[in-house]
Length: 310
Figure 1 (cartoon, helix red, strand yellow):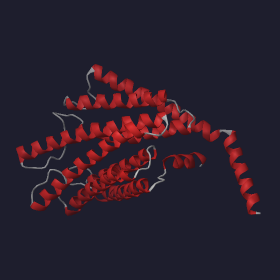
Figure 2 (figure 1 turned 180 degrees about the vertical axis):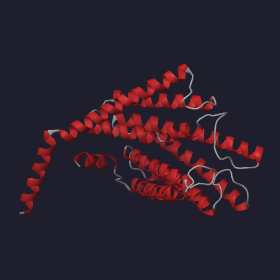
Figure 3 (figure 1 turned 45 degrees about the vertical axis):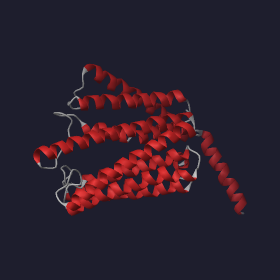
Figure 4 (figure 1 turned 90 degrees about the vertical axis):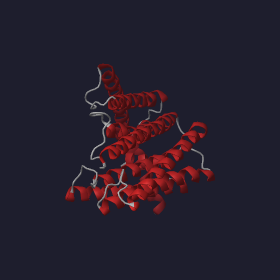
């Protein structure tokens, strides 16, 4: 429980901007969980019209807002910070809301211009993503020049935001592929692939969730007593190498399990390096949780609290 409490203290929102993103993200995650339950009960999971869309997008955008709230903890509290904060939060909510509305209407949420309403929704979704990327770019520039956190957090924030933007660029490529399919066939594609079998969604997901993964790694390093920049850089390098390998393989039109030998080596070394750093983090957290001083300090605090109550 002490470790959980310490983890919450390290990520909890402490300003109005952070709380705005935290609660907006929580609402989106809850929506994703609810729609996951609907998908399990009702199905189908795959396809252009499925409960997977509001489930996955709600959860993913919600976690993105949580991670951005953590990023703001590492930056000075500025009134103008509401600009990127508001853009990122509002556009994320709009994007997920429109995807959810389209599923409840029983029509595809993406690449759908079958009616004036569908076309307007698709246009708003595209503009929302554009504004979201702009907000993330502002946040990245702010972090470059105004960062006030620890070295491990700096690595996680800068590399993580770059990965999110790279994942967004892959999403843009996916949108282009989808539009080409619609133009060629007149139908919304059931599955998006680069070339014959490129894992577009996996590459996109690894980029979009890079900030969360590296952020958790940085927090774990700090709580486990390993605050060095080297460990954070190693973890970020490993994750980035894995992302690069999957992305290159996807754009080559091959499934992620069929990279070239060189790209496979890059991805394998990257994954191994990240796992080693993650293992060090877990080892540090277990040592912290089992340290005798932790229990003694807690016992002393309880004794002092009882004395005050008496």
